[in-house]
Length: 175
Image (cartoon, rainbow, N blue to C red; front, side, top):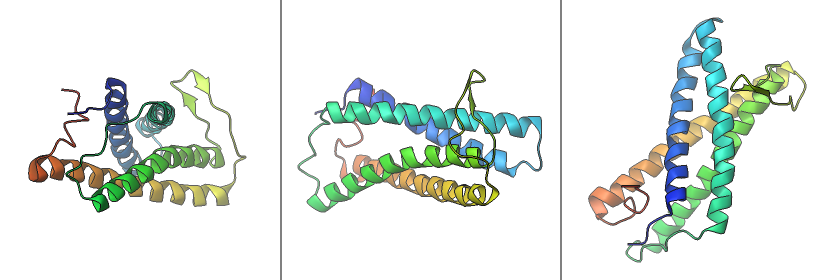
């Protein structure tokens, strides 16, 4: 069985955990009414995770471009291969677009990102209430689309493992 490289597996699972954490942290923070120290702390953590995901996805893409993944399983029908390939393109797009839209949303809101309380990232755009509202919606739509895509991706992997009984999932598992 051909497997993904250890680096590919590490990046895959680390990014997956961070995306899930950012998603649930985002849902939690926006549900807190008003402004509170806890809410502001959650916003900071959410931003830090987003910036980290963006950096790791860039590394992952570079790794993927320079390291050929295992060959597609011959037992999988061509249409499923095309759907899986399309899903991977969608996920890569969303893994870049969601954190970038969040970063732009914060800039339009006039709220800088101070990564890990150490490095203030530049404000790319000036504060703008109308753009802020638009970018908030864009970020929300991208994140919810990513949540759906991640769930579909996970369900497809489980389908391959439990119903098709092929090695699709095992090739990405580190154990």
